[in-house]
Length: 492
Image (cartoon, rainbow, N blue to C red):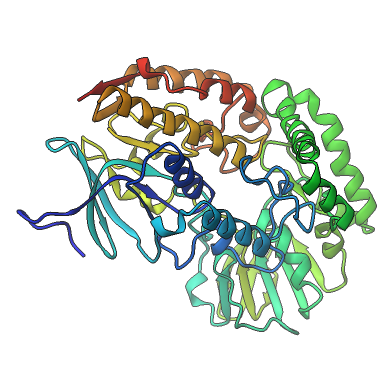
């Protein structure tokens, strides 16, 4: 549906939230608890859950322990495993949204088609696939793992077999006894390759660079453990705190000094020695960059799957794709029936191409120009707008939920401050944002993400930090524990 016609009265709400994943649901709950009742959440999918309803590939699971990858205000003592799998995480989100009575605020099957700030009326004008509306405040909780990224390969469109991305898994297609090619070895591929390996006749893994694989040590939780956590909430907090400290320690390599990499790399090398017998394959599976330069992956099943007789790891690179085969740069032609893309996600949600600020430029345009926000939550030129996990609001060494909860608290405090002061318009000062971005760039100069010798979505095409917070997550929480009104321009 197009924008509201001149003279028409659009449906209006105080707050519109984009996305019903962990960020959007958390925002809706916190806003309701703070007394904001006029809240609508827009979700393009047919169900809530964000990335956890979208990704359904075999073996899909979280790479952060569930006791930490959950809301602090909604602890779950009944996780069935150390690391939650997709169905269980999605059930958890549904349950939390239901228990906090925010399901009724979510509009499913409602895709954002455009949003622009109207300076004259001081409102956001929002167009969706199901109609138009206006809002005093527009909050984006659109996920950064929402859009599939496909490789740019000659002849890709000529392939006549079955092809799909891990984000859009074809559950109707039977891989039994097929010759399957997997392109990419990111976190999703590391999870689904061990699941499909026993099923297929031949599995060819096209690897651009080997991932660092460290022990996962996943296991089912015991009934006695779950009973203990239910009866002793302090015990659950202790478990959560222990995992927090262990994961936070990855920052020693990320932004303190990469000489701390040695114990972490030792874990990865021991995993290789323990799980791959063939020295030639072990060399292929050995990373050639510093651990932490790109995302290290927890897995106990991936390397053994590569060592099976029906699996071949190809590192020569792809020259072209033909109707029923893939040709390597060395000239080898490998016949395949199905191609699965494990090539990850685009770093900027499509929705950000459709959200324009007061000067008519989109968030995506500005991000591609230079990663920029203030605290990962606000953007100069975008009044009455806040977001979660924006540039420099994500952490490479902590659970995304910890960062999300920091941002949610900050955003809700901002809106509460505006309400208390009777202000209707708020925008971060340009000089404040520039100073913050400058600080992030200075802090990033010696991080492993920029100096570790790899290419990743952690960095931009010109070699800058693409948006990771280059310091401790507890320091970030301190900075976001209250809304710093002095950093913003506010008016009524």
